[in-house]
Every structure is written in C-alpha cells, then in structure tokens.
Image 1 (spheres, one colour):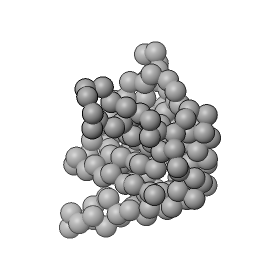
Image 2: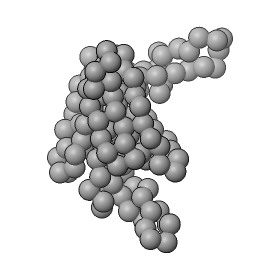
Image 3: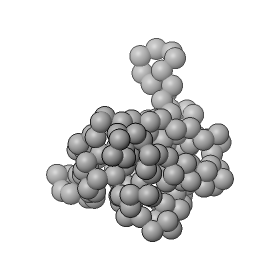
Image 4: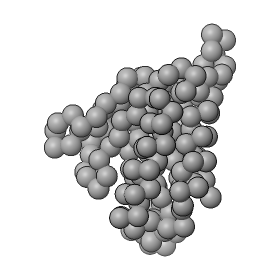
Length: 146
C-alpha cells in the first residue's frame, strides 16, 4: 500500500464539473494498493497517517498530527501510484491491485479512518476526477506499507 500525503489549506474533488467532496484544513491522501496488500496493511497505514506529526507548533516545528488538531482528511483512490515506468514510454500497472479487491480495501480504509472520529471525505473510486487543492508548505510525504 502506498500513500501520498499532502498538507492542505483546502481541497475539492469535482466529478463532471460538480463538487463531489471537499475539506478545509487537513490532509489530502492519495492511496494505491498493490496486488499483495491485505487488511493488515490498512490498519498500519491508518495508524501512521493519523499520528504522523506534519502540522507545526508555534515555533514552526512539526509537532502535531491530523488527529491532534482534529483536521479533516480527503482520501482519494489512485491506482497510478503503482505505475511501473522502467521499460518504454507507457506506464505499466501490473503491480496495482485489481479493481474489485482495491475497491474493497479502499472502503475498509475509509471506515478505519472514520472510526477515529475525524472528518473523512473521499474521492470516487473508478471515476475521472478533477482535484483542486491549496497545498500548505508545501509538505508532501510518501508512505509505504508492506
């Protein structure tokens, strides 16, 4: 499982020019699943994301987590995180989990995040989305759970 965390001031997901979901200050998380991922990966990744200190204190040190600040999360499914570009010019996605299984893991991941009493919004699985965000920092972190 791979996730890209982006600290944001705000973010909006549009589908067919209509607002699908949005958040104010918090984290946008692009998440992708590899063929070998399991539900155990979900719990470990959720715990890491919720407790990772990516928000600054008064001294500008990264000291607070999204959970500490009760900020929002916008979680967006993104199979292209498992693109393999080693050969040729067209990315291969053979390492990405098949759609049905990835959908199940994505929904379970959302449920795990929501169980921590934070505001969690999501992108639409399998849909073409336009994502507008105002990055804060920018602070972008790549996480991997094996």
